[in-house]
Length: 78
Image 1 (tube, helix red, strand yellow):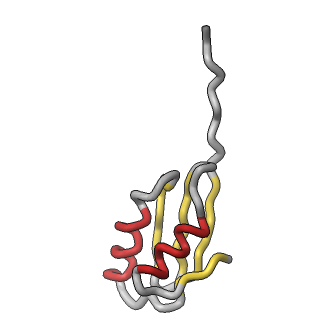
Image 2 (cartoon, rainbow, N blue to C red; image 1 turned 180 degrees about the vertical axis):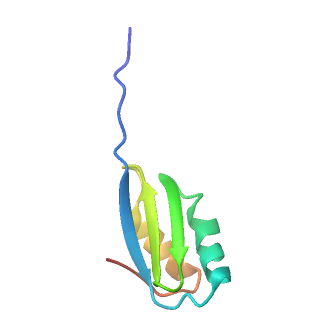
Image 3 (tube, helix red, strand yellow; image 1 turned 90 degrees about the vertical axis):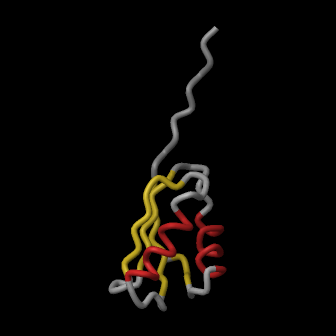
């Protein structure tokens, strides 16, 4: 018997982080977020004040925003 294969959809989300100041801030966010469920790729940019996250259907973007806030930054979902 063959089980049906569920295809995950990959989507990209952008989060605004207004108080990233340096490459160290980018590294902190990227290191924490890349291990969260569903996350495939994360790219933080302190100059543009953005974090771009690519992931599957099981990625919880609101939880990722909360995680960034818990790291001491001010994040909001666009």
